[in-house]
Image (tube, rainbow, N blue to C red; front, side):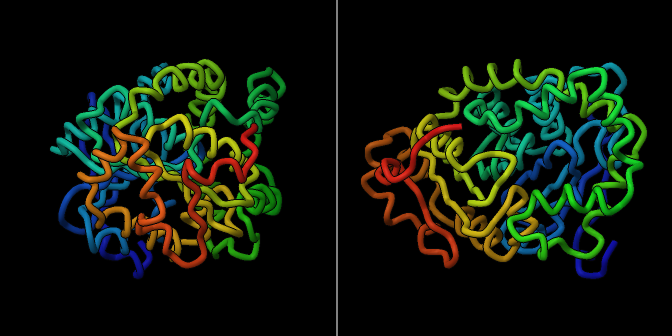
Length: 325
């Protein structure tokens, strides 16, 4: 592992008879990090060090991702995936944790909070997949078709420049794509069984979004921070506004210049936001989340609103944006 991240311990735990690999660092109250659809635990390497100064951090590889075990014919639905995360917390001895998630991993985190609210102290979600965004629709339909599945199975072996172009579209500024970053994604896609697992998730995408929409009221009362890059091409900021409205007491922070993987693209700003979130009084935030009017009235006092390079959007500022998909 790169010397810069030597503080991470590469560990493994058995979950439901399968090996789950994870990175661990720091001490204190636990924080669990859940990667996105084509990602792995290594996506969080630029964040773990800063978080580990305030928490005991666990960055897991989900089933069939990274170095974790291959599960043939497993249920790839969002509910089953959330339940497997809860089982991983059992295996790790975590009764409760702050949960961070990105994209599809953010949707899993939301479902975890809905199905196992006693396990989730708070949520930090980077552009989570959500039922209010139509942007993924065309790609989901393509990769759900026979032709699309064939293309997907060829994708890991396409020339590096094509992979780089795809990753650059996920960044607000392509110049921020770090050295070696693209190799991490390519290597992950080439793991046996990985593409098939992704395609199974894609096939159930629309059904999962229906389930997630129905589950959102159950997340009310759990302190939730939504983080979005304003140049996100995968999940629209407008869908984040709608999600913010649906989750009582949540806060949306928009990061100018950021893309879909803003925690990786702008780690300094993202880490400051996450650390501020971890160090605030979340017991008070939980009370505010259960009383949305109080949260809206005092939203301007939230610490994250003062971080440089970001703008905080709360329910009181919603009319300034046009919710859409």
